[in-house]
Image (cartoon, rainbow, N blue to C red):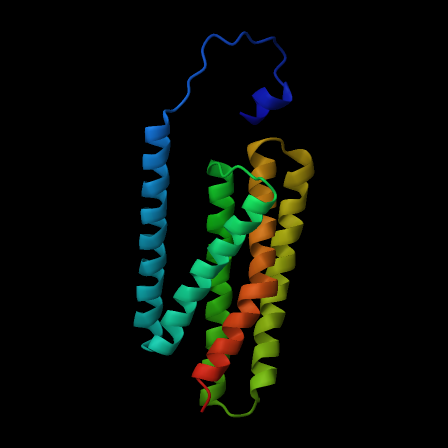
Length: 185
């Protein structure tokens, strides 16, 4: 698709046929996507609960994941962005990195319970150092796709950057504060 959009083929193409999807199928696709997304989030939360055995970790993580998706979709709506397959892939990447970052925050917080060497601020600082390093790595990896790509690559890169940025600057600090309150000794 990118090659066709940019006109990079060495020959001229004639469009023979175009198809469209009915609104019924589009609505069914949307409902299925929401259902599968919720099932995926619930599966992650169940695995997190099995790992930590604490509702104080699983429930805030679930709320944070859902909040992150809602904020990301809200930003997409504000800028008039069409959600296509590339954007959905970007959302999945953002949510996946979000779960990873929340696990880092949780591990650093719980590690501090075992070793009372560091205070809460030092543990959260350590977690956010790891998170910011991962954030900048993702950002640097996506920037070339914005300028080199067209169509789906650009949409994927922008959605990923917006999603990861929303997570790092809004939902991760909120999750860290919630975990700090709920797991405080």
